[in-house]
Length: 358
View 1 (cartoon, rainbow, N blue to C red):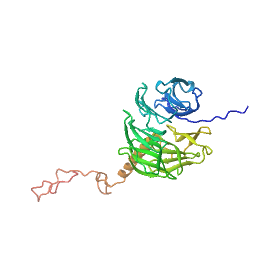
View 2 (view 1 turned 30 degrees about the horizontal axis):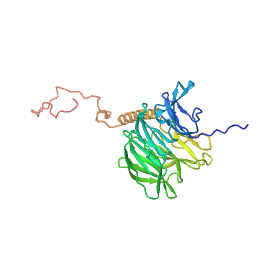
View 3 (view 1 turned 180 degrees about the vertical axis):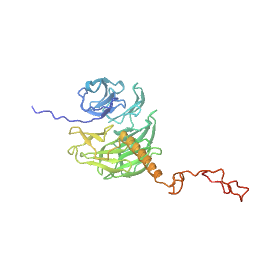
């Protein structure tokens, strides 16, 4: 009997309190093939949806060397259609799901109280993301439209504008905390572009051609510095957000197969990617190395010492009034002679103007 070829459909990093990054890729406890994984920011639990419908909650217990996973049912998501998109808010207080049937649900977490239950949010969900401040939810549809929702009460806010020949397929909010943008992968005719929307007005402010081919998955690093796109034939493109320029490109990373998930590691410049016909791949990015915290402190200490040394050298070699050189015939300290008189002057008992050194 030939060995079974293991295919990893989806994957995600899990950030534990002890700063250990774990990857859960294949879950034998699930019924049906995994479709999507949503990881809680605490790293203590995650939700998995399957092709047979419904979602299941998995809780993590123990330490790295003795880690256990326990499965629990989610009553509010037990008998639902397959969920294409799963997302926790950044603060962990909300959980949103988008189904292949276009049904949008927003739940409080961990109480699982339903905030929004909208069966006709889209024709069919394509992608979903939640803003850094946990205030907004962006979602895209299979028909090319994109909508913005209020995460607090589930109220729809607006529909993103697009041209008649444009289809908005993927969406990710910026995460650096200073630039309130929404990145969208857009198919404009036969051209693939990455559009940028200002979330204060929801107006498009520009676009850039990065991947230059249809994208099927998008991701933003936790620090907001890099944006990644995966293609339908296995390519991965990583761009620096500040310049919106490509800094890493991997061709046919998954041997020409459709990339199903793509995610940055929380504390390293590597990405995890999966495909519908291949195993998970961890790729180290060819991007400039980030400064470590201890390197920044070392640089500051070095600059302080260099400044102190420069000041000392300048002071020792300067013509300071208080450090002027003496003539060979000049005494080290002029003496004051109280007997010295000028007989021709009655106003000035010394016969001369007062000197600074007496």
